Length: 329
Image (cartoon, rainbow, N blue to C red; front, side, top):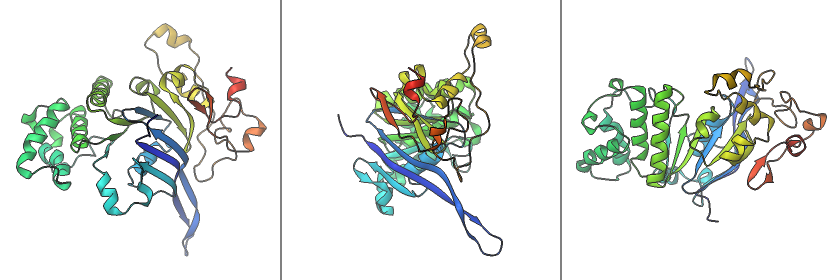
């Protein structure tokens, strides 16, 4: 086994909550990411899924060091980014790039496509200014955009075209890892398929490692090698995509999969959907023990006693549920 290109060790990202009228004081913390351990292999696509508010985007920004960690370590090729200096973090930006969710907000409306894609090349001194136009044209062609449009502005493109521009910008520095934070959720269904196919082609062609974040398992299963399911800041299930999708072992994962619509109207009418009661608990004051137990149809009193660890059941399939084996045999 080769060493992973990226490793997360008990990563925690908490945001303090201030209270009080006259004297501001700490009133707790939002535990957006609360003890996540993951690894990413070279050339692997890792899907990260969960409902809104579970901490997926915060985890992505923590990996990128756009928000500081409260604890744990983010290790990229043996370098601990959480203890690195600003200069060291800037140096690894070439290897670690991000594609954001909203292509309308992630591009500067006052910059042409040429300037948007050329900016990282100039900031990191990858090529001379005289050579940037040729490199921009190459990147635009790579993502399926005609180079003749490079002097246009973002408002002159569709949503799918803007996301292609954002992907071209992320590829400009030949990164080793790309984090795509729900890159298709703001796009039409037909455009989603085009962007997913583009990302899959780029991973194969360039040997990229990809963390693909989404809340829709039907999207993730088509592109991912492994899938990690996140709930209230923790990973509750992790394993090969086929195992997690076809044989989910955590009650939360089963509920997510039951919500995937099927293209067969007859099957759609008869299939049983798992509806979870209530809302996700507050990350400021999470429940004792298993955070999912207030909504879990299989919860017992012992589920409140301790936080279940992420343990292997079979092969590389891991689940954080003390009843996983007895329920889903």
